[in-house]
Amino acid sequence: MSSSRQAFKLVVRNACLLTAAPGFEPFVGHIAVGQDGRIASVGPGEPPPEADSDRFLDAEGKIVAPGFVSAHSHLFQSPLRGLGTDQTLYGWLNAIKQLSEHATAEDIYWFCLHGSVDFLRNGITTGYDFTYSGELGGGQRSIGIGEAVGSSQVDQEPYEEAQIRAKLDAGLRFIKSISIVPLGTEQEIEERVERILQYAGRYSDSPLFLKMAISGWVQRASGIEGAFREVRIMKRHGLMNQAHFLESPERVPEQQAKFSWYRDAGALGPDFVFGHFIHTTPQIVHETAESGACMCWQPSANGRIGSGTADIPALRKAGIKIGIGLDDQSCSDLSDPFQNLRMGLYSIRSLYKDATVLSVRDVLHFHTLGGADILGVASKVGSLEVGKYADFLVVDPRCPDTGPVHDPIATYVLACSLRNLQQVYVGGNLVAEGSRLVGRDEDKIRLEVDTRVARLKAARDGSVATLDLTRAQ
Ligand SMILES: [Zn+2]
Image 1: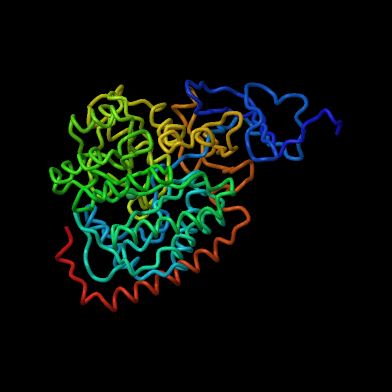
Image 2: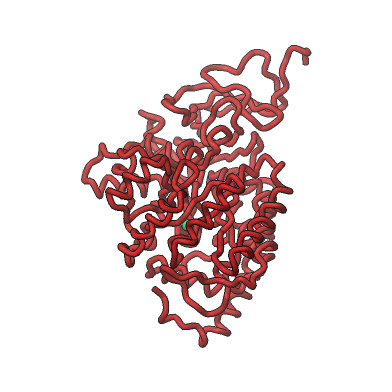
């Protein structure tokens, strides 16, 4: 190798590239990945002549697109699928609470690892993770609107640390969101956040750990002080906040009234994301757009638990930025980003009885660069552009054959699915191939999860007589 040649980690040739960069058009070209795992060159045609690498990948004309961004996820819930199947939000949440409230920090490590590798295997390379902080613990109370349940006795830190380790061990890129569990005194809550930030900071050198965030709780709070608390924490530590809001179809006016709590506390702005944001009013939409706050849409989860359909065209028309998430794997059940895109597209077109109201390009944007944008990480992930991490998917629309490709974006969004997903790369490293993980003992993860869930089920069934299920909202 002559000294003028550049040694890349990986060079991909002959790819049908959907970069998802602003205004992108598909083209056949290359990607060269630097030793730092970032994209050094991407463009039409062959790689630059000075490109040299030990690893060349001939994509043979297959689609190469950015890894999906799930802008709203709860990875630890991955082994809790198929529960509460005829329930809306709080009924379903109580069904999984009966299991998760018995979980130890080590259980949560394995559950989060399970969820993280599941994401990678399915082409989701970045996740915003609402980590478990003991908020489903605290004994026998059921969860509902306006109820702060959980236990201030639960030591959050081992749980939080377990979930950071799990995502790093899996190799998933992530934003870690700390639940601001409204239990204990003001000082106790703020000190708890302080401690979590401190030890989470020990892992922040990893290129997988994109940023910290907080998870707002006003949806389930009983007073405005919770909103002020969140704003204080956001400002003091420079953190974004994604808050579940206007999700459940129950007691909607009561939920809508809480919008003013966030507004009056000064929470709204570009660092604020409303998760779900289904049952809005024109005034709420207007004020959100004015503030620059964003929203995150979970089409599969919203359908599964009957939450409703967010009015995406109205939100977009108002100028609100939108991302898409898979939500937790226990209420999406299948963390399939292709299904999620189409669930969203079809639900909106059906709602409006209009196929022009949302395009294939729109939904692809929401699940890639749009998701990264609302989370403030668009300079690192979400599209295939020079300087960003080389997180990408190789998808073959001809295997199994979906027919001749007339429009690669349309084929990708409308006709491709997990069966066409052949390879997943994170930072230029192959992490999954044809639904199998690379370099990871899947049997070990399955065995750990099965054993631990069996123990939680035994604990649940041993205490079921004392659970007051009639209090579910
Ligand atoms: Zn959620």
